[in-house]
Length: 154
Image 1 (cartoon, one colour):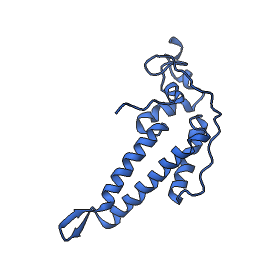
Image 2: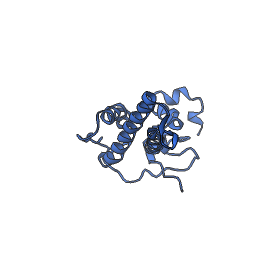
Image 3: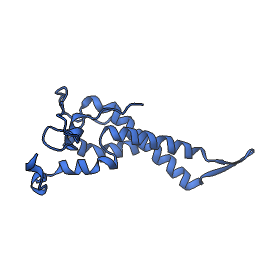
Image 4: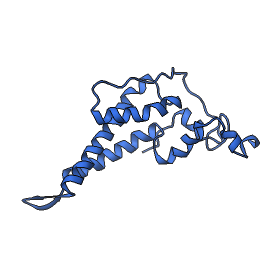
């Protein structure tokens, strides 16, 4: 399966120099969407709403989200809520259950595993994975070029 293209904002954050991606290629900024952060849907579960509130300030600050990203971000947040609930169930009830067929994996194990994959997939679309943490941190300060002795030599 081919990799999903990263948004121009993430390419630039991870880039080598102004207007260039990590491979030194010029980044096409794409359509000029209005970068207004979406409102959280009122139907989000409490844990999903808490995750929305946790990630939205940084995504907005970095101009990585727009109103039409609402559904994708809601899916990420609900996947997180499912992952957390399944993980807590496994912690409470254990990894296995006893059944007529013998000892089986607790169903919550598979749910947590699938939700974890979904979280990781959605998080990658928004730059929320550990592999993009440093790139996001670099974009946070105004003194990034001063701290980088090679910034002016590009």
